[in-house]
Length: 393
Image (cartoon, rainbow, N blue to C red; front, side):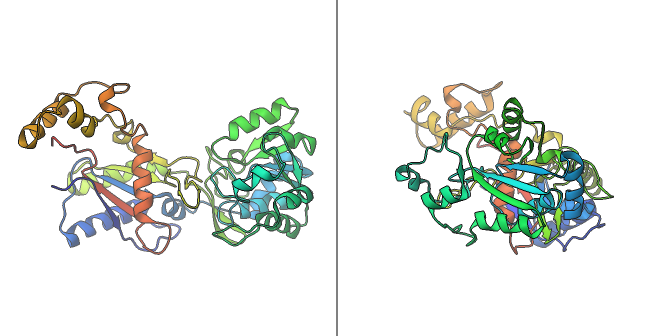
């Protein structure tokens, strides 16, 4: 009777140099033996990107960031456009940027950043006299309109926090507020677009307005600096704070790890599982209004069986429409037969309306992220079973 099962799997505390492939296989097989379940073909083993990057030693220091920023942007005034408000995700990156510049102009979007961290409640905008589509504010104008507001979860006023952080690194700091990226060119033409999912659009707009050296976070530490870690595709995107002077980067070997775990489990059990290395899930907190998705992608690496989208029938639609006159065993039989008969891509057909048109890796990564959590559960590995089964199986 069981449908999809998502299990958090405990693992040792993983350090740089550990064999992540062996650790994952050992942990899953130990859990199977202890808890009395069996692996089956198409089970999904998901591993959080954090332990993959940690085992690989994919770290960088603020000095490494500073050296790359100075080399690529000249060491003068650097514009930092649309960073997210995060001590964990961006503060150490900003420290490195400031160390590689004489002045940093930070342009914050308002009332919130890209992933939903609010500088202030958006309802306050209505009577403020500020037009968020056109107005560019300095700190004095911002304070007059919106005051001193601390983040409800962290208790931090990110305006002062980012300003002080830059000044601690010996650079001059200026904070402005705008919602169109190209406003930065009035302050500097050397720019890092720090937004995550809209970075290419921001870069395009800044260049069109006269920006000269315009990069994204993906262009910083996209190659090693003085032997540092790096990520060729995402650079500083997806980093997490390791210490006050180091960051852990998004894993650069995620695809290789996913494929090797699949091979390891197959060799040891004869079962072909699917494997993915996952980052943040893609979901929104309806109370805090924060999107979880601060990583550049949910699926950092994954095996071929996880490529694609679900192709499912909506059981409620069948029960309420095609088989509205049936009930009990007769209804069950009819629905099972319809599922077995489904052919081709159901996209656009009414019978699939309301199913989730998201990539399998985004769905599975979100499920894994919710299962593992980000605290002290100690389950950086998630085993998902029966995900590809349906009502007719």
